[in-house]
Length: 235
Image (cartoon, rainbow, N blue to C red; front, side):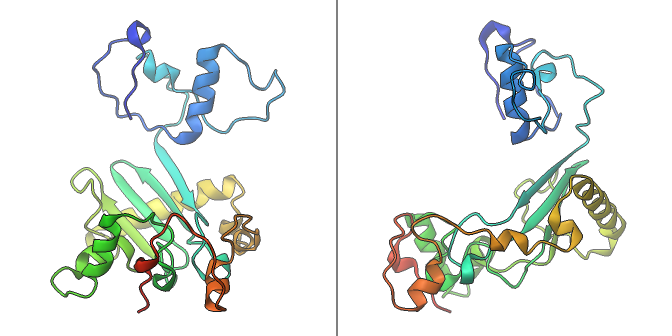
């Protein structure tokens, strides 16, 4: 992330290794605007302002030792509009990811055109690469199914190409990251940590393309303008 704020930015040109997340933007902007959200009737905000980083005066009381990230359903394209649930933790230069439904397709089902990826010439070429053993790895990396867990050394492997999950040398680290991630998510009341992850798939999708997989399997023509029909790729 890059920050530009004219002469208001203290010591411009520096690089900070502090971890910030999307949930930190709202409290930062509120602080910049001089607005106290809660006193103004806003609901409590989970994130923390990173004005201290902008002003080069890091607040040691803010826990930025790790980042938690998660995903449930981002798009349609799987049976019953199922999602692809993931949780992850970034800490000390390592990214640990837990994929809770590894039998599902991460980018959406092939027969509905991998609907979690917008249509583009690049996407079309990657889909074509599946049919050539020499280039299939492009498809594997972009659209193939994933392990139930992933571990990456983002310092030496920033593009996350080498999954260290299951490598004995990293076994203790992986278990430590998984434990911390689970404990933090439990403290936040994440339903998936308590065996109630199915609740996310039960929330109805209200877009016009909802239940796309089911409806197209039944022969209905359903509009989905962000994908290219020729990208439908039945295996």
